[in-house]
Length: 536
Image (cartoon, rainbow, N blue to C red; front, top):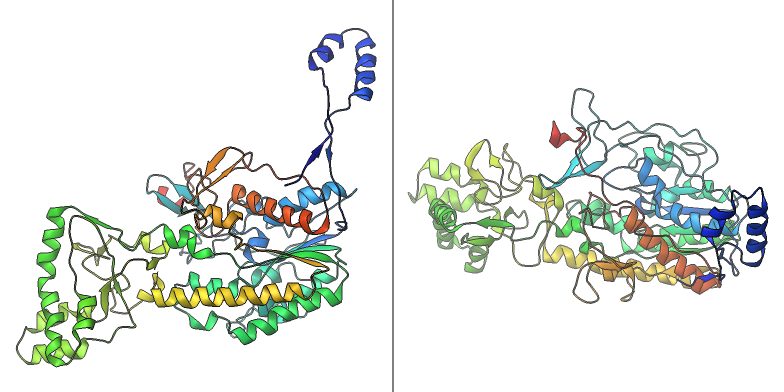
């Protein structure tokens, strides 16, 4: 970040000494200040015009963090931090956000329980250790403040910037609906996000849009293919967003690519081999599962390949072991087990006990487990302490016999789809920006020398980033840069990214802008005041 400071000489000791000298001290200080003024940070807009600065995007633009949108997450949103710096170049500058007016917000990642409890943002419970939702959240309410400049709407994909359906109706038949847009839409159900953004006549914009088209699919652990936008649709929709902004205003701006989010704690906090056992426990589990392995091996007699059988067999040892999961991509061995029972290989009780293993296997190296699995692994299935989920009972096999394994992990094949799609979408973003290179700068979150690669250890193999002499970790620890949802940044992380954007503005528009002080900002909030679910 380029910065310029005037040299100063401030004699604080003299100020104290002369204060009691009947105004003589004040006079002398004023004379000294005329010759040696107080520090003033020089700023310069270059060719940019920040008089009406707006933001457009999804969760990162809105300030969503800790599984919710709440007062402090908005305060430390990336656009608000950028605005705090570019606003120093404009007299009377304002940047209004659609204030949520809730200390803990509404947690959108978990289902709210009964008894009128509303879950709010996550906090860090160091005794778990892990995130726990607060129990004093608030329902999403309409915004009634002044004209907004931050049009960030959590959770939306590219098509939702372009359709009035994003503002309503709130109907199960309207998948585009977002209560976060409806609450501040100029005309819910009629206006669009882009129309509202252009209505304020922006002179400069920051846009972090288009990532949920693949991001949402990854967060669902690739369990919902319907939310993975096709390349053709993405090309049409993202280019429509850019064209609308360019033809509907004379604003310049910065557009952001889709970062390498699979490196975030959401996908890294729980490892594929998170099952830690001592030797005695491992031996006992192996003994208990011997009959299951025998039945799986027995399927070779009815035509199941040895390659298929080998990936299903379970073997535990002292130390870390792979998580046992349901894999609905596997062939169902139910018919095989029925045939073995019919042939007298085992009795009906043994056949019933084999139901959880009809489509199960241990994970393999480099498969990614989503953070929600952490609250399930190791718990007792059906209250039976000997039936530990992820060890004896496959993760994703439910009490009612249904399967939900797909929601807990990303296979290597699914990761390939995600990364290939992300790269393709980033190419579309870069091409769209290049079409208006005289007005739009690209913030490439995949720059090997950038903050994302540094934070996630993708550049040097060492996760973490050093900022202002302080080492910060790519997680949601008290010394981390992520919020407790494992995906979105905390205030320190937001400041790091805001500074990257400010640097892009400087490099592309010739501006000189102050940076945000990262280490002065808070990180995560720790449970301890009795409002976390884990404290009840």
